[in-house]
Image (tube, rainbow, N blue to C red; front, side):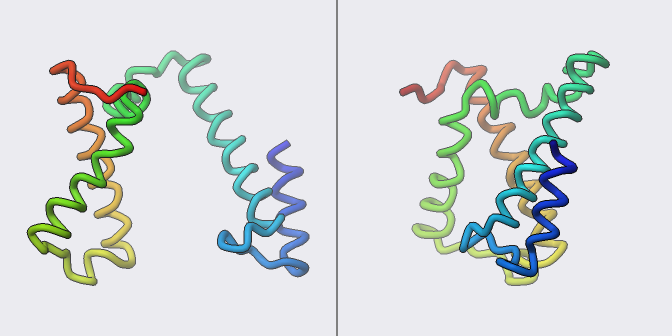
Amino acid sequence: MAVALFIFGFSTRPLWGISKIRATPSWTTICAAISILAFAVLIFLIDRKGKENWFKIIKPAGTSTLTCYLLPYFHNAIFISLIGIHLPLIMRTGVAGIIKSLVFALIIVLITGWLEKRRLRLKI
């Protein structure tokens, strides 16, 4: 299925282009193909090879999802809006920006895990 979606997405690129903003069929089918492949890899690693411990560090993102989702908004409200701390542009763009984003996401998940251990979670 992923291969078929990749073929469709890349073969129709000349018609619509690949645009997230316009949600073109090329973009959506390529993203669906990537999602299917990622899901298949995770199924293989976790169910077939028993490597669930590899993902223990990010478990709080799945068990306290709402808390993990909202923590960056608190960070932005406190550090950016109230205190006015901004990272330099070089740290927000390019490879450095990607690395910063990955580290920030991991910190948010770790804080969520720390809060979860203290039984502080948001629920609907």
